[in-house]
Image 1 (tube, rainbow, N blue to C red):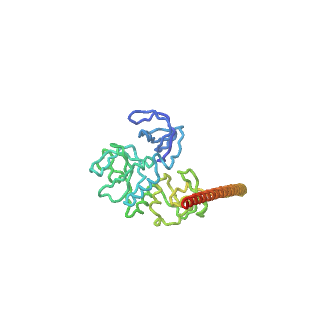
Image 2 (cartoon, rainbow, N blue to C red; image 1 turned 60 degrees about the vertical axis):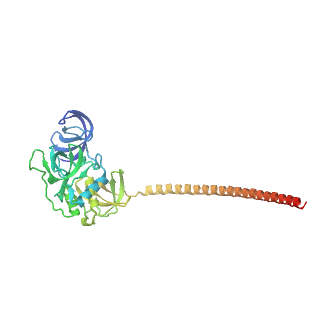
Image 3 (cartoon, helix red, strand yellow; image 1 turned 135 degrees about the vertical axis):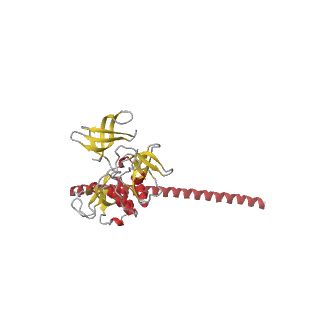
Length: 346
């Protein structure tokens, strides 16, 4: 329940202003698992439609960590900036379909908005609204209905539509430093650091690879789980918002680009063991490549030698031609001088 999924849907979207036939893969969130079906809150990111459907035989896939319009760098930047202001993104709040009334800081009035799930947040468009008098605490992502814009708003500035005092219920947390803000964010997301516990049966930090979802590759990493959380940069801890998994997370060092990050333990695997037969074939291929490179080097050297020889021959011919031209010029000048002298004497 509450798991983000992808659903292959073909049917009427009940509950929208005009019932529409929806066909394709849509994001959703599981609301209930019943005996005969699964109740899913469906979302269409293009039309912004939301509806609830009972799914019986349709394929359901676990949602990807990076959703529509997701930018992990922008996400980490926003979370880090919020932490520096003692604010944190609380992902434990979920929409029940009710509209919210949210305090707009510019004029002090309440406007209608809807609560966004973590999968719905368009990080490239979201802004952080700072409310006077609110110096720390949890924030949620909302969409303003009047202008279709997005923002992070402190929870204490939100109330349910039609209610005078009923706001979003949450647990108060003591936040006095940016690290406290990230600790609170980790707690609300049900994320814990692995520390020095064994992973996949080993504590050797140099035996792992991690899944890079942007490159769609498994890359070598070093685990740095022994570093105390107080010594970790808050930007590293902010990476947990890029994933939807709960449970244990590990601090990793990407060997490919020398970057620190935080990933779920489910994104780790042991490095494949080297196969001797593969090594033999690889050595054979390298030997062939080396011989080819040597042959290429000989051919290049021969080519350069021939070119240098021809260049030297051409230069000799040019020098000879210049010398002949110079000798002819001198002879001409001498001849003209002798004629001038004979005329002078006569």
